[in-house]
Length: 310
Image (cartoon, rainbow, N blue to C red; front, top):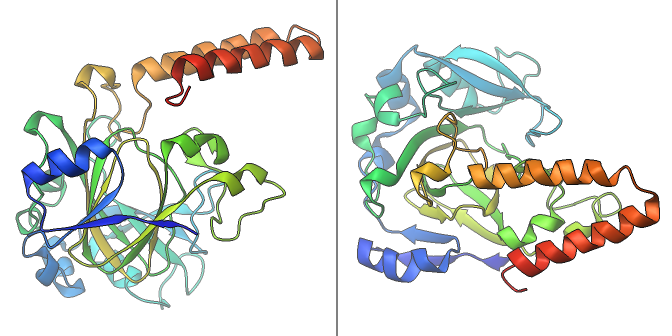
């Protein structure tokens, strides 16, 4: 049984910084003023304001999008045509299937160098959104416009920065896992290989049974605080529009300044993982019983010196 995410009503900055943020657990912030976007951002309004600006979207024949095995393709569409398709259940025009699914994550003007900012990529929409002012200005990293077809479910992953998910229209189901569940999620980089979290293959992924999910359902106007390193799996229950805002949790110098997506591990962690991989390559030179022995020694060192409950 999944634990419910706590809900806080009409949270101000002081309450957030004293009662929510220090606990480093997800929380729904309900009843905030997120601007006129909640009432204005209909399909017609979005199409009119953005028009035929071209956007790159994920297109998949299935609702469960899998980043590890890439069961989707990138396609370019005019924004207004994309919105019309994403809001339909079946399509007269399509790339693969009449009931294919669409998902859009905004990119920076130069996606290889620049984080996305709704004020720059979608200036006609940005004034409609009020971002809760809980964080210091110099910690802001990016604001990401996201739209998805009904049913679209994104792979379980973690982000290295704090995140406010502002749900503007539509409803979402979000399942989250603590950073301490990392050893149960069969990670490939920052993503879990367990695609179906509701009916997992426990023969293939037996440790997943030990993961302890938290769950919430977002409605229009809700803001979900997702602390850095918390895994999350997001499903749009109907055509959904949201804005993610990412804030640095660590000092700016800790992050890779050539990372426009904000999803590369902190530089110290990246170096540690590289060293670990080299150490494991060294152990391959030894017979099996020695690899087992020194592998267990390494695990013990890591547990003793890094685990919070060591």
